[in-house]
Image (cartoon, one colour):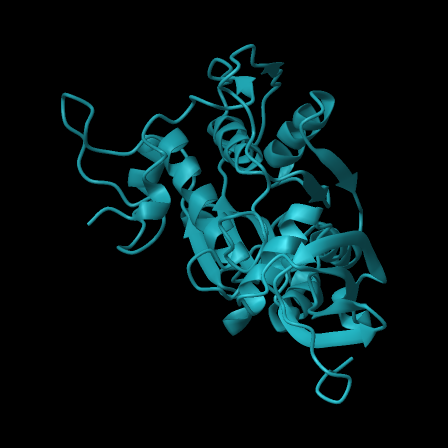
Length: 340
């Protein structure tokens, strides 16, 4: 049975917010265009980059996306600081942030932020550049085993072979790795293209990071192998196709109606109004409609829509308050039965 998360990747290239450029001569760059474009199409708005040699294609494409006004690019030299910046952006927006770093021991510096995202349920997507399989395990300077470095902290961890059909075959990726493909056929219906593979990776990563099916948001690692040439000049042009628009960023905790679910601590009753208290480590900027959706799911009843409540947040949620007063459905609780 086809994976429902991947059913919208058949027409890859359609719906991207920019026109697909011609091949650059660098599979690393072409794959980076497809991958970051797929992420942007799925709502990614913030990319944090710690520059490095192996990850240069991702960094250059991210800069192009910023030039087009499609993302906010944040450059941080230190990977530890970059990881926590991405973590904070995800907490503030409720949308996964991408953090990109180069290969080797640089990856380990993201571990503290990944652990924090794991324990707090914050959606975070880590793109770690790596050497291709033939350059691993040969005692090169500043290299390490990157796949699985974060252990049980990740909701999804994939070791992605270097792009290019010939490169994938040369890599001899074992079964189960992302990018495995069948033998190519004359009609081209066999091996998945790099663009399709990139779209599938973006779809799986967003689903895992936001808890789309698991309802357990958290960090994701894509370990991306790249061969030389590690980059090539690339210029993107914004698409004129009105259908090529980016989607609304998916909010964490797997809510498909745009109203995220967080643990409701209770009502704080003050006079004729009560405040919904939200306790969670990843509180987004809710619109009145989104806040109303949370209230409606928390305790539906016959009094739906008959009282006015104001959203409040505990310190752990990362917000002081929401300025929205919304119609809600929760029956007012007594002061004795409420919890702050």
